[in-house]
Image 1 (cartoon, rainbow, N blue to C red):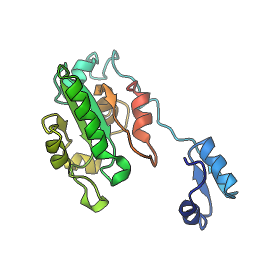
Image 2: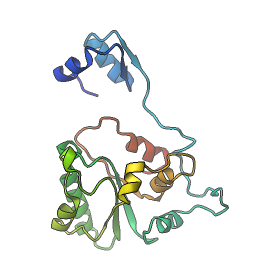
Image 3: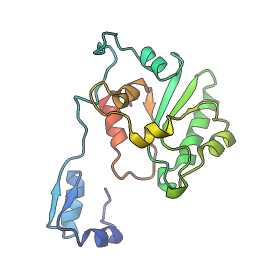
Length: 197
């Protein structure tokens, strides 16, 4: 995902018996750097799992609406739900910058009932993560932030057809993932596959 393969990345990859790129571009960069032992396997998601659900009929028989999904996740029906599905890890994720953008959005749109689903750990000192409680409080956003149960995060949401993860994405109005770089960036692809910008 970089125009020239960073030297430290090349040094890390050299001992590998085979290197996999997630895109045609990444494959081209690997080959340009002399990695003949490389393959491309395109990055993606299962469209039978991650898909737009609004307007569909749930297997239990109820008609799926955005308002119903929001209510199932504890949001008011008229809330504007921003999803953040990412690791709370170091400066690469730019958590303070993303929260600042949310603060500006809220200040400029006081009539919007902003809610932010933070699908990440509130704090993650082992990975140089940020203390969300302190940041949100400092920016006046502590009343709009919602976090899943810590055990749910550790065990994961089901990424199967009609599982919690695709249902969660469909409840979002938008996904916020304005990071400085992505390793995989799967939440971006998953949200888009669910019809969420």
